Length: 119
Image (cartoon, rainbow, N blue to C red):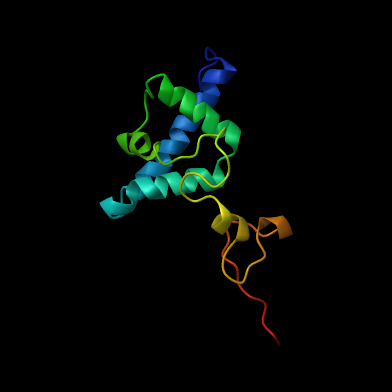
């Protein structure tokens, strides 16, 4: 990393790199699910501040972003949008997997719910 770059530029460079890594993974998936996969991942795992920086960068041309990230951006929930819009958010995500308790009860959305055995 260059010492010439501002802290803001360093953050932006990291976000671009992370978004491109997600897109690179989904390029190995069927074309019909690529953009939705990228958007779902970003909606679930990126905090609003990260998504806000991503959209600011996209609004300024999106230099350095892979075309798949740009395509997926139409499905990514902007931070100012209410919960329930976009892909991978809303009531289903809040509740967690079937049989789960949801994040309100401390369940992670990144881990599948495994029902406790009755043993």
